[in-house]
Length: 149
Ligand code: SF4
Image 1 (spheres, protein in one colour):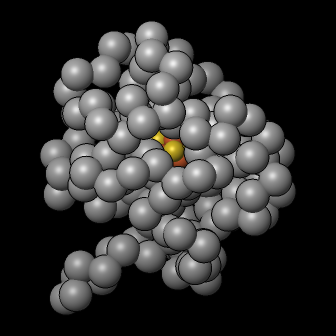
Image 2 (cartoon, protein in one colour):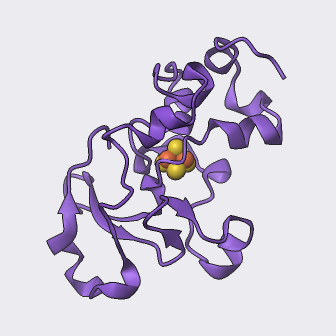
Image 3 (cartoon, rainbow, N blue to C red):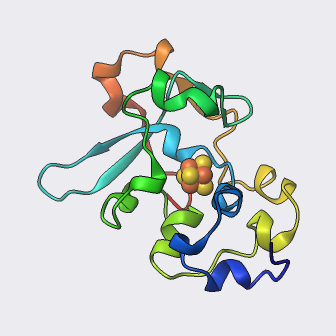
């Protein structure tokens, strides 16, 4: 694997190895939040309600290996079309690279530090609630505007 930070900004998603693909995820956890879409404008609204598998303290999936078996509508980022990628936050490395944009300086693959994400105010850790604790018919009450989402 290349150690050149620019490698990530030059290599198309389709040419990444499985390991390289997994490393692109910064662990922000925003893809694990419920979203609503305006039927007329198609604008996507994020909520602070998370999938029941998300560990809301760490911001990590509680069963990453089995997530598709346990949550049938879990988004498989690897199979998303460019249009579906718009459901991901603007800061998501997969979305950025699918739009041929560079990774931000705080991304661990560029900064070299996982902590650069954990310390980032964009994170959701400690700011979300599990779907098991809310009435999903009242999702509109939980709409929030995340930084970079
Ligand atoms: S939104 Fe993107 S970077 Fe954030 S956890 Fe999901 S796949 Fe990873």
